Image (cartoon, rainbow, N blue to C red; front, side):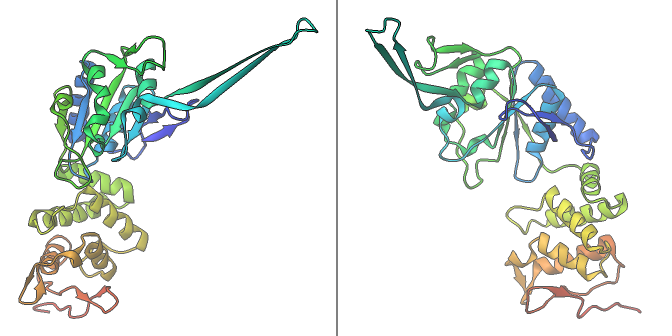
Length: 332
């Protein structure tokens, strides 16, 4: 998404980037999310890292054609960071010297309240993207319960004379989160999840991954397809706790294009890039003293972008790089 300037620095205007890939898979997710939002329900994109949840949330928000506020959280986040808080004091002093012989002085000191992004979105009917919301503690999000159900924002009593604000009719909320087994996230209260519609976002389909890799790198669709097939085949091995996502496809494609390498098993730069991005050296599974990950990657590379009889191992040099030493071809 492209961010267009707005008079309020905390508010964004999103515009779709020219290289955004729109496939049937993406269109389906977008249409489902927009339907739920138009029905008045918040949407929750849930999935592992690297599956494009935030990009998808921004894409959906851009379709609503309304200003957007984005909220990013951590473990120290609290409800005042959502709603607002006092920021310093305001002091006023009035001197009345209308009668020269009499001087009247009146001083007043009051706390200054500043609305934060959730309050701004509720007040003006903006779209809120709450990114990775389960990185904050559950109690920090309690204020959302009445907003999403009763369309009522409960404000601190000293913010305004009344303690509540009616949520603007055009206010929409889009949430993203990682699964709860991820490090650094908290269990989300059932009351909050029950108020939103969750769309599980897994790995993209092949067509979408190829389109994204080609658009982000400038490689041809054929070359991007070979890279995507390498990553998808490696993903299915299950040798990593966190399998490679479309980000790995983008990384390999962009670096390959930058280095001027060929998407070919014979190109040492391409083999090095695949090895580094797919984190082969972190795989501890061995067989007969050899890394299973390295052997499987050799097979995958040969199958997707090389001759069928290419059997060279990825030889690791002392400085951690690889070369083609030991490469040989059968029958040649």
